[in-house]
Each structure stands twice: as structure tokens, then as C-alpha cells.
Image (tube, rainbow, N blue to C red; front, side):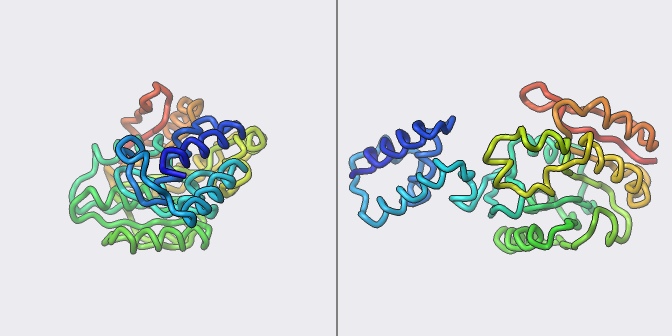
Amino acid sequence: MNYKECYEWGKEKLAEAGIGEAGLDARLLLESVCRTKAGDLLAHGDAAVSKDREEAYAKKILRRAQRIPLQHITGVQEFMGLEFLVNDRVLIPRPDTEILVEEVMRHLTDQSRILDLCTGSGCILFSLLHYSNGCAGVGADLSSDALAVAEANRKRLGVEGAELIQSDLFEAVEGKFDFIVSNPPYIASGKIGELMEEVRLHEPVMALDGGEDGLLFYRRILEEGPAYLKRGGGMFLEIGYDQGTAVRELMERAGFCEIEVVQDYAGQDRVVCGLWY
């Protein structure tokens, strides 16, 4: 088959399997196998594809048809213009979380010290350090498997000033920070079974399950967090679309000031932030 024929075959197989973005996923998988770019489908659709690459592509298409996440098949996900390694040990970085990073960057100053709780792949902390000057940070996660992925990303991206620690939230954290940022688990336990198959079966439950009402980790972070914030320091939390009011109230009760609920590009509540004095 040539390049376009491979793509059409893959798109058909994924459509038959009920994959929503069959065309996009088929193209991305073909690009990952052939090491090509988006424009090559139009510019070089008649290019021959070797038998080895045909077979490799077919295997990836069949895996995707089984609802294995695209990013677990390619092994990478772009976030904030950077490419992060991902697997089933970490939550796949999502565009919604870029809102959190962008909001922190609006307040970030040179030489700031940042704490990223539930760091996972490290995408939040490493993006902040990459796009700032002289900042340093700590990425904390309870999962040693997740920290191994974060360390691989730290080396891959050449991030300086980042320390990774295994910690149950603040348990092993020392010192005070200018910013505490987190995308904690926030799905209510009873809702986990309703998630799409790619998430429910292939992403780590501990990165999703936020307790009975989805607010377990917000309560802990906001109760314990002030002890780790410098005066005037900022707390920035990603939230579920329906959690803005609840997390804002938790932040108010904890004594934070200048609290804001920030919406994503779809108009949904996505980040709650406040300052500690």
C-alpha cells in the first residue's frame, strides 16, 4: 500500500470500532510509524510504505481499536508546546490543564519556588520551569511509578531546578513556596465507572479518584497548604467543570484572599486560585 491507502485503511478500521476521531488518530499513528508530518498525507500520499511499516501500523491501529489510548500507543503527548513521555502509570496531560499552567504563568516572577502536588508526568512543573527564568520547584507524587515517568521527562527536556520526591501530598515536603499548584484527583468515586473506556481502564485510578464527593484532595491541600506558602504566595488548583463553587468555598474557609475561579476556553470552570497572607 502507499501512504494514503494505509491511512484510509486505518481510518476505516477505527471508524468501525467506534473511535470518535478515527481520521485524526489514524493519521497520527501513521505519522508515528513512518516518522512523517501532518502535511505528508496530502503532499506525499502516493509514497510507498514498506511492508515492515505496514505491519507496525496495523498493530497500532488494532490496539487503538481496542480503546487503548492513542498516547499510550505513541508513548508521547504534547503539552504547552513540549513533548512528554506518557504511559499507563500517569494521567495523560490534557489541554484543559494548560489553563492551569497559563494562569500560574500570569503571576509567576523570576526566582520563584514552586511546589507541584500530584505531579504525575511532571508536565505542569516542567512547563512552568521551562517558560520562566531562574525558578525552581519540587514535584511530589505518592506513586513511585509516576515519579519514574516524571524523571524520564525531566532528563528528556533538560529541565533544571526541579526536584522530585515521593510524598503523600505534603508528607515529605520541606520549606515554603511562592506557588503551590496541583491537578489532584477530582472524580467522585461513584463516577469512575461512567468514564470513557480509555480513561477508566487505562489510566491510573489513583490519579482520578477524588473520594466520595470528588473534593477529598482539595480539603487536604487547602487545610495543610498554608503552612508551606510564603506570605503573599499563591495556591492554584485545577478543578472539575462543576466544582468551582465548592472549591472556592473551601479556599475561603481556609483563609485565602483574592480568590478567582478561572474558566477554560469552553466557558467551563477550570481553575481556582487565591493568595495567602
